[in-house]
Length: 337
Image 1: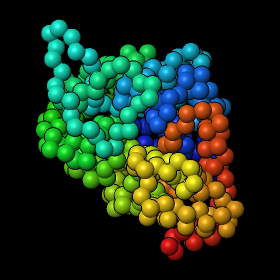
Image 2 (image 1 turned 60 degrees about the horizontal axis):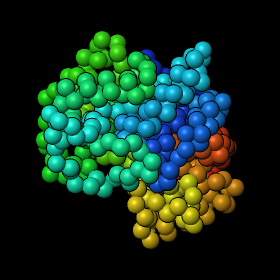
Image 3 (image 1 turned 180 degrees about the horizontal axis):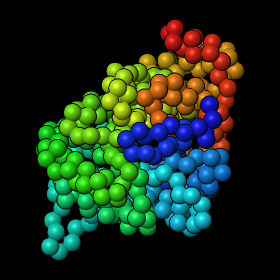
Image 4 (image 1 turned 60 degrees about the vertical axis):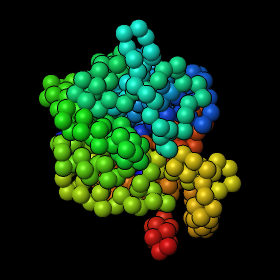
């Protein structure tokens, strides 16, 4: 598997490198990340051939977009610009005279919090005006007018519970219209969803003409639940970016270190499964992380694998894993279980 291999997002004309870099770690995911670490990680990724970078207002409550934009503007002024994606659906806000923020939503079970994020509060807004405002705000934080892909972030029942219908109605009655207008005007290359819930993407495919969706954690060595969605997406020409391929860390670190699964401490049955997968990979001299990264791209619906890293060292490890040669016999052994 080669990083520089490109797959097209058919409807948009965009091409994504097989490996992309996500920036959640830059917002302080699980632990603080310094500016120097973030810039070093981006530089290492660029030198390795990664040309697709993803951010979100949620990541560090604005911090990740600031850091990614600074890197692209200041460190790559003469280079061909990489493909950039960010997300809509959350606005970063503070209380002020004349504006009362809505009551804080219940804690999102998939939100791990941020160790050195900015001092803002997220407000969910999937309406026409909310999507347009989110796009404008991301342009300002990135310091760039060009954003290639916009993903509707964390729309789904797991995130919003009893508020799901309210937010879904806002998206289908106005939010998708705003995204379609931005695409028609040439201000974005395409749009889709960026979620942990495959069901949300399937529902959205019935509501809007999607280009590309980022699905985290649902098509991995540990979780194949999105396979039917991938078949449907490929048939309809919707590209899939596979995120969360380490299932929040446990497939990168194995069962002996960062035992995080779906942003929480891994239960015993998941730890046991990981130990079994690691044992099989070890028989073939393949790091577990390498198999985890390369697995999603075996499905032709997947255009790119998106991984996060907080330091140059982590990026270098991911690059080595991604290009590690994996024998067909290992895939056969994994499929057998």
